[in-house]
Length: 305
Image (tube, rainbow, N blue to C red; front, side):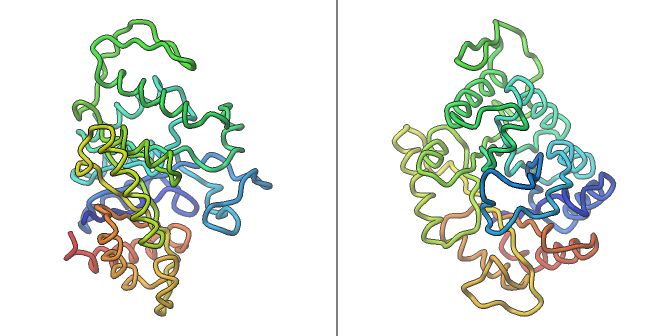
């Protein structure tokens, strides 16, 4: 199993110097990947409830741009993969999104994993000037256009939302034919889309039977589309509340010690996970505390890699 960590990016950790320093230290600890996420506003009266329960974490009010964070991580590292989990694919036109991601893939010498999601907060779509309705169809066309921009010698596209006349777009990713595309989501339609056209699924920690059921939907969809299900990968995000004392088993990994968190990875592996990464930015308040948790988790999971 590959083990990753969320690059410091929001709240008390949204500092460019610390982002770069932390990325270097996390790579030295042996992590396989670093991940950045995407938020643009924290509404005082949100249009939709926070998926994690309770209110939106206050730390999200200070949120460093995910591609800028991964650029800092790229220049401070040599080996780790750099992923977005998730980048909202619909908040900017695909031609600009492709240019930004291509530049990051080139800058990192081919270490980018492009993870896309649709988000959950309608207010952010309103702030970005993007329709909330029709997100699935917009994502499908976005993926079509990204594929063309990344692989075609002459780029041309005419769809319901975007038109690109026959053009040269010679800036191509370091990875050929393109960076791996991972898609998030927990509906049947989202998992079927993973199977039809992605390289993997960005999941989240949840009861293993439910996780496996969703994953099986993606695998069946891949097979139905004539693709190799074994080529797909499952990446699971965990946002734990780290405790000093062991938590009841029913609360793991939502709340647990670092030792319990490391032990839970076996459950995720049995459910089909190929990679797991941890984000502890809402459960820690100081930089060295975050790095201490990262060091302990890296040490406790070394034998799993």
